[in-house]
Image 1 (tube, helix red, strand yellow):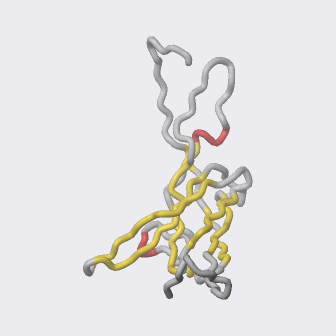
Image 2 (image 1 turned 60 degrees about the vertical axis):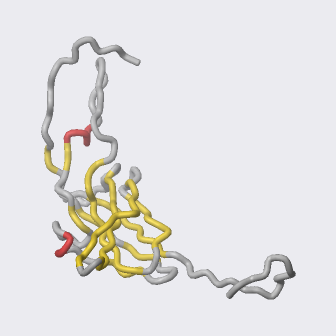
Amino acid sequence: MQVDLSASASNIVVKISPLGVIEGTVTDQNGEPVDSVKIEAYTARIEDGRRSISSNHNAICNDRGAFRIWGLEPGQYYLKATGRNGGTYLFLGPGSPRPSSWLSFVPVYAGGGRTFDSATPISIAAGTQARADIRIDLVPSATIRGVLENYTLH
């Protein structure tokens, strides 16, 4: 439909389809919520006869392990807990490190799959509000120790 913007357009109705939402919680092997986990939403499509996987939506879990990804067009989505947000921590002086800073996990998809082919898809239609909880196994990660020389505090 084409609209003439120089004339009155009072009887025009534009219908917009609502987008979808996926929300959920990340918990550890003890059922405790895990904060700062990065969740990525992947989609797959066929381009030139080959499957193409892309991620264009992501979220970070809050202090209760909850995440929410919104603005999703209709389609199949695959959620993956990819790592902890925040990277390296710097501790100076008598302060103690954040307790969870030495724990990590192997990336995992919603549904428990470790690979894209074993992941469980989440179907989103217009206006869908889906739920996908993810369980991760926290394990000790590597510790790097050393001495910084000629370091100047900002």
